[in-house]
Length: 369
Ligand SMILES: Cc1ncc(COP(=O)(O)O)c(C=O)c1O
Image (cartoon, helix red, strand yellow):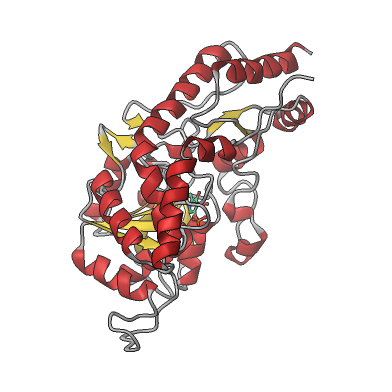
């Protein structure tokens, strides 16, 4: 039996920085700064600089960062927020947490990102914000979305949970909108050793209120200015992220190498391959191919020891939790087709050329049968 290829090889990444991680975690243990603390403060400074933003506020998850972002924008009950139905559910959670209604706009077939051409017709008097996602690490087409936001005086929140270091027209994502939210879930391109997230913004008032909201609505201990949350980033996560951030660009380059290689080797197969838009430099968080016989192909890869995954098998408008929105199959046909056909192949900086060739050989074997 040939070597198994995991869908994600986090142990390989941890091994590559293990000594630095051990030292950073030991330092946190020594000074016992477990909730926020100096390593989180330093990471916030470094990550803001990396994104070209003035402020970064660390959270205990990307979901919390998105929740607070919508609070900062004053979104509340009765309001609508426009977003994509083809994303991880947490994008929509933020809208639900503030009591607003997610209004979905279908995606483009090529990028699977929110289709800017469909955006304007979804805007109503109740729309309070636009929240697209840089899906799989590829920026959505920001300029036409921003133009509509400006025209209708709507704030833009970038869900950049999958897109650390991605570029749009040569500029790193994170400061195109009013607020951008990142996830540091362990499997993300920049992952903590547990949960973590952040928002970045150039708005000092937003950053100050976000710091208060994440810490029980307080800036002075035991004085609470508004109802807040315990959404603090853990000190150990700040330390771990501080170790990993200097490696992020190199790791992103390696992910792009893997994606290019897949592209070369899979070009002559019946698969629909991910396409990098002319404006985009994807962070290649996921490499998602498409095919109508996705389930059979997945079974073949599983049986051959090649890990793969589905991002995402059910679009949000058809999830049980959002049944009350009253959507039907057919409402967002491009997202529904993508959900039926998508298959994520292994992609990580440590994936070797021999491993890539084996994944490709297994796929070609499927189509020969
Ligand atoms: C697009 C998207 N949005 C939001 C989130 C939520 O981030 P977290 O898991 O850190 O809460 C994730 C990550 O899982 C994501 O992929």
